[in-house]
Length: 258
Image (tube, rainbow, N blue to C red):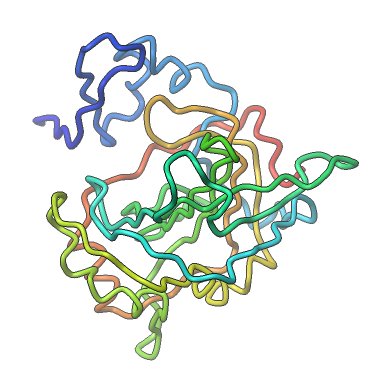
């Protein structure tokens, strides 16, 4: 079978070598270059399979400050719809924020929402089931380093299901072309929280980015409630997406719900 290569990445370190990688062969990323070594040897790699029998988290509860609307650009990140929020260069503390306590006894840590993107199918699985898509809200620390991700599994619901979050993004139909960018004003990121019960039930664990170089040190929050969308909304997501799910990783030092 011919390998499908959807993306070119410049290898870190200024080597000038373009390293090709594909989601369909995610089990080989660590062999492509030493810069991707964590993809092979990391102890907290994402995504993972989550268990209903394991219960939900009672620690690291996220607190959201998503009250203010933001302006951003809707575009295709190479694999599906995404949105990047506007902010002054190098300044992240003006963005919507979330706080959580990493360790008992420590002060709450605050991270800042820089945007979102969609994977299709979903990265995470639950009891082996993989939803049709997954929405990631990506948060960074005050210096812009990726630190935490909110994950929303997406599936089509009943005939009456519809996501108001997606209703607010009519430009989604223009997202197949990677070069097309649409400005979205007064976007309210908190709208999607209500559709999954405000993250009152979630799994959390220590993980990594789900694409090379598979950087670890990411706090994951995965909503237990599924984000149900209408059939047409689901079709729009799938039409504008390419396969973007990494193979689930073996549990090691992830400290799920701990």
